[in-house]
Amino acid sequence: MAKRILNCTASELASYSAGELLEAIAGSEGRVLAGECIGITQPLLTDITNAEVVASMGADIVLLNMFDVKKPVIQALPATDPMETVREVKRLTGRLVGINLEPVEDGASENDDTLWQMSEGRYATTSNAMLAVQMGVDMILLTGNPGNGVSNQAIVDSLKSIRSAVGDKVILAAGKMHASGVITEAAEHIITKDDIKAFRDAGADIILMPAPGTVPGITMEYVRELIAFSHSLGALTITSIGTSQEGSDVATIRQIALMCKMAGTDIHHIGDSGYVGMALPENIMAYSVAIRGIRHTYRRMAQSINR
Image 1: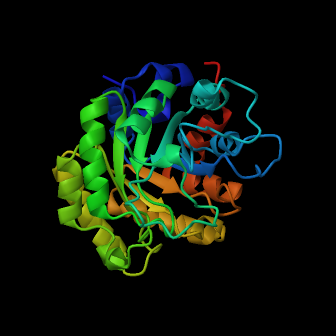
Image 2: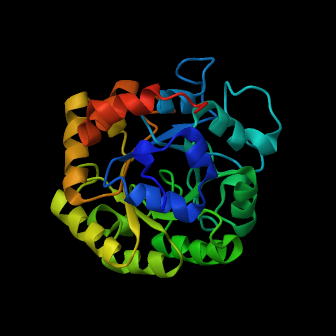
Image 3: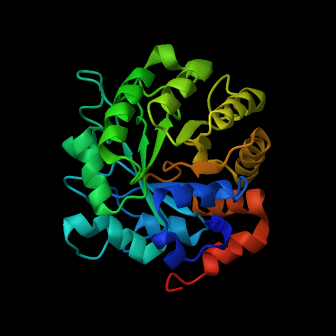
């Protein structure tokens, strides 16, 4: 039986299988925090990776956005073999590491000249997923960045092929934090029970949905119903702040955190657009304190990665 993440050391987490990690998350009863960060942008602290900052403020899971498995770049990471990039992040942080892959359909992306522009190693293909597993990724999240045109059906199709290819070697999560450029899947249509059932049937271990108060029409009551339905299907959930409110004031973060806790989520996600590349550090810590108090927050912050 896996220990809950709250009590795990870095070496224990590194030894767990995907199934044991899911047990460790579930056993933590809504007290797991995932911090998203971008590696290709200038790091907040210049010569320290954003991943290290996110981990230092209390995140249990580091989620790398815009990570290209074929051309991996993490600014301020010590020079390393590209195939060892993820393992180096894990060595430096002692955390679980996930990446986003995007099921962008042909011609759907409108971001040809923006930060979110797609590159070959970010598409949610079976070959990219298998490469991510070889690199040591603990979790693959199938989702979409702003304007990239990721539909729920595209997520389902990618899930099926990726699950078939990787088996149970990695945790698969799926869902959207915002419409991702698909206007017909905005507001309360971002995710429905039908979508959740389709994601689960296609192989998702974890269902991602917007945190209450982050997307128009997404209330605590609505999210609570979706989480209960996900749990009834045997899936865990992530509630996500993906609408730049990771750059809000601490009081707003605490309010969102408690609504997510009341809704019953297993993992709390805070996004990467406070400063470009990561949430405000004080907001990561405030979120952690809100959902599990200072004892578990300080423990995660202080625990040596050499344990």
